[in-house]
Length: 199
Length: 199
Image 1 (cartoon, rainbow over the protein chains, first blue to last red):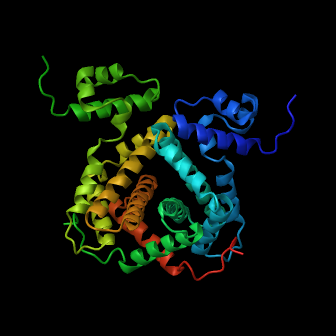
Image 2: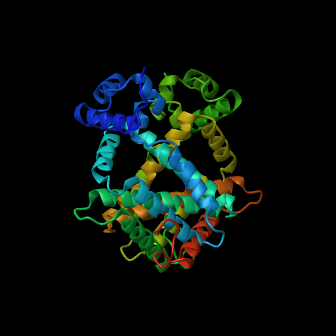
Image 3: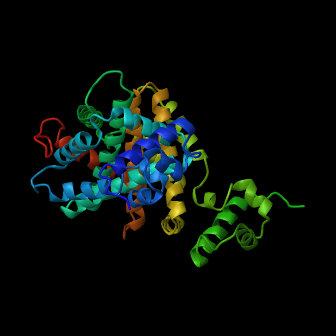
C-alpha cells in the first residue's frame, strides 16, 4: 500500500513544528500533522511514540554519547573527551539548523509538559554520559560531576548560540563556555575560605 | 474547632513518609495521611498543595538561595559564596536528619511522577541561584554555570552522604566534591587539545 518514504521522518518533523508554531502545541493533533505531511498516522507512530517526541530527536543521542565516551582511547583526559564529544554533537546535530532549533525551543518553552519532558531528556543524557565515564573506569562521583558539566556546557552554549546576533559556531561557543567555567573555578580554590554561614 | 497545631506540618510529613514507605506512594491518599497524623484534610491543604509536595519541603528554599547570594558582601568571590551557601543548607536542612532524607529519596525513586517533580525542583533551585548571581552583577552565562555547579555539587554530595557507611558531615562532603571537580577541570585546560571528532 505505502511505498517506503525515505524522508518521512523529516517531513513529519517539519509539519509538526510548523503546526505547533502556527496554532500551538496543545491544539495540534497527530492526524493534523500527518495530513500536513501527506503521510499516514501509522507512519507517524512508526517514528514517534507521541507528538511530544517529535521535538526531542529520539533516543539515539544518549546511547551515542555512552558509546563515544566508553570507546575513546584510554589515554584521553576527561576534558578532551568532553570537548571532543560536544564538538561532534554540535557539528552533526546542530550546525546549519539554527532556525529549526530555535523554533523547537520556542515550542518547548510554551508548554509546561514539554519543559518537564525536556528536563527528563537532559537527565537521560547526563546518565548516559555518566555511564560512558564509569565504563572506562572513572570513579562514580567524578563520573557524575563530569556528566553534569557536559550537559550544562551543552545547554548553556546552545542558548547562547541561538540568542546571538552574530554567526559564531556552536562548537566554538561550547569551548569558550567550558574554558570560562574552568577559569572561574580555578581562580578561587574551595577550602581556603571564610564563608558566610560557616560560623 | 481545631486548636493551632504548632507541629502539624512535621506530623503530616512523618505520617506521609511512613505510609508511602509501608504501602507505596500511589496507594496512599491524603485522608489516610491525615488520619494517621490525627489531623484534618483541611489542615493538610493549608500546608501542602498535594501529597507530592510533602516530599519536597516547600518553596522557601529557592527564595532563600536567591536572597543569600544577592545580599552577600560584594567582595565575596563566587566559589566562597557557593560553599558558604551549601554549608548553610547542609547544616540547617539536612544534618541530623539522614534517615528521614534517605526515606524520602527511596520514595521519590520509586515513582516516575515524583522523579519528574524532583527534576523540576532542581531546575527551580538552579534558576533561583542564577537570579541571585545576576542580581549581584554576575554576567548571565557565568551566573547560569555557577548555578548549575551549585546544584550539581549539592545533589552529588547528598547522594554520597546518604550512601556512605561512615559518618562524614554533609558540608565536608560538599566541599570535597567541589574541590575535586575544580582539581579535575584545572588539570586539563580546554582548548589545548586534539579532540576526537574534531577532524
